[in-house]
Amino acid sequence: MIRYKIYQNQQQKGLNAGKWFARAVSDETFDLAKLAEHMSKHNSPYSGGVIKGVLSDMVDCIKELLLDGKCVKIDDLAIFGVGIRSKAADTLEDFSLEKNITGMRLKARATGNLSTTNLKLNSQLKQQAEYQKPTTAGEGSDSGDTPDPKPNGGGEAPDPAA
Image (cartoon, rainbow, N blue to C red; front, side):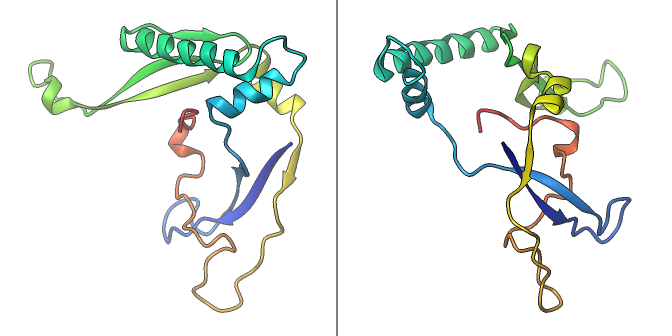
């Protein structure tokens, strides 16, 4: 079940100022060891340690391939690739690696049974906790953190490795 929390956009200006959004929340993150242990309990003849070794090697190989400019598809999960962030140059002659390339990022696009369409059809949503209205002016939402002014990440999927 996917849990969500409702929050109010705290921006003072803009199209979505003061409007309400839902944000997916997670109560736990599985690291590689915990994932391997979980997998070993699914009628696997392999121990959590063996599975962790295979997964660790897989991660190393995926990193190697990504850094070599390849994309890696894990069926029914995602296609991983590297994206480049850059600033515009007025002309081709003005473009340079140092001035215009501002960074790189890991991209993950859902694929197969985890496609956006299938995710919508097969998932169930549940509100994590009822929104508590502030009791005095100036208090934020019940979460105690500042809401994301770009609730959908500005159009990019969140980094699954984070």
